[in-house]
Image (tube, rainbow, N blue to C red):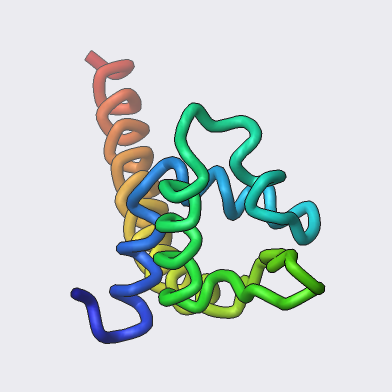
Length: 112
């Protein structure tokens, strides 16, 4: 099991159901029943996904009588976004270099 925060974040984000749950929670807190509604899976399966997200620090769960509403905690996403952003800069630079190369090639071919 992943021990550092970035690994826990990416591990939690690896599953499309968990990404969909985070998307729903980005619009506000929700109960397990609310979260489970659009999915064709059992409440225990949804609860397992919520535990993974909670372990990663991506959600927190409150206590409101018998309800345990979940809410998004986006803070752990910032280091993940920063890590990914480094690769975005790499690709931007690579595409810029490719564009310059193609422009030079095209310029050279127009003089033939």
